[in-house]
Image 1: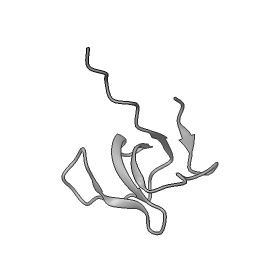
Image 2: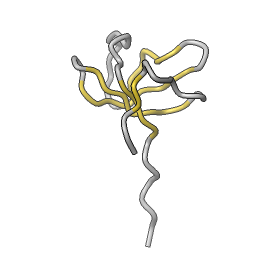
Image 3: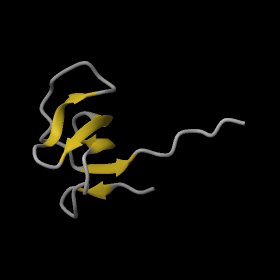
Length: 66
């Protein structure tokens, strides 16, 4: 997987994504097609601004059990 610039495109569907910003680094965030990047981060318990997101990528598949 590679990072996708928000200038190139945004996610096509609501869901959980990894995001990157120069200020906050890598964090998990929710995306809502109608409202954009949600203000709640599910890796962090804060309500910091989300307009600094520069890149995103889908979450990887979870590990498979043996």
